Image (cartoon, rainbow, N blue to C red):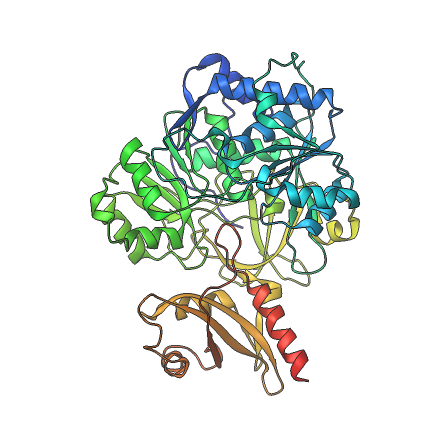
Length: 553
């Protein structure tokens, strides 16, 4: 069983203003620090008082149009202040937020909105044509729209480079800014149980259609406290928000911000120079990024032009590439002593942040350990579910107050994943003698080759150690001799195109890796498929490869 982090914070969560929904925390801050800046969006400042007023006005509108306790509203947006307003307005009514990725197309909107029986969707206006085309085939009846840049100042303090064409025809949609600019009716307090469902987020799933994970108000509150406590953040922190808040990882930092009553510097598009400019201008001291973005900043030709010394703490996720001790040392150099550690292990069904890296005690390659005593993590045999001893590789299982309530309308999948309060993740990992958790990959993505089990993450990490390789995706490809052979899709670093061959990299891998782990095929790609957060998608390339093999037959 993973151990509690031995550092100077409480062994159990302590809630600043009690166990309440986060929209209630927002209102508390509006009362106690109404003029403090809550969100700075490219230089546009929104105070806690203003944010609360906007939430109330939208909540009043939604209530007048039939949204009440327990009802769902889809939120289909990029990271922008309007997302926050929509999210907490729905929950102020005791409603259920259903975040939809802005990468979705019509079929995905039709499917998810119908699954949750949503009548209203709040979306960025450039996405409205998708919604309008989906509406005849799903439960949606009304769309509220807002351009991404509605809160953008006339002269942004850093470049705003997110530009999508606005639709010419928005007939039938309601403009969000019209709602926010008009005084609304009072919103009476809505009583909910903290264990009521407050959000449903669909998981991509390795098989079948996406499943709606039902998460309680308590899930969000608990993980807000976990995040704040683990990394010792307070209401005085200046948090740089660059990860998408429509994704569970970025969202937990939005919740932590609302829990603390801090100031958040939000951007829509992640760019290395914009990150550096914001840190330099506003002296941001806390940032959650990705290892790929950290590397881009370390290697940026203009990094020396910016003062990054205020950035005392950076947490990151190894999307695309693995965070290493060497990278952390380089980060400390450019930030004049700032730390860079792996943020956490987690998944949608657990509201993420199930572990954290102990301050001052990182183990690079690990995901840290549980933050509180009431987060239990163990490694089990995938078949029997019996707990395994330390350093054994098996399935990661967890139990804590934020674990989801089940999959919407899918009792069979729920019964497989949730048993006696334990969430069986389908992820492979191990726990070392010090209690640190290591994520080794999705069990369904494990490659079986010549009788050996190979985790694609490990081979990807090794391939990225070659000076020419920027990113790697490794998959198993059906093979008569080995069962599966290992194929690597590689994106080369700038300047290496045409200067190195696939065969040279195969020969290099032969020297550096065990015979059963090394790739037998390599294919160069200009880019690798990824989510909006930068997480590389093996599934896309597996499907491509399967399709090619089917055609060859």
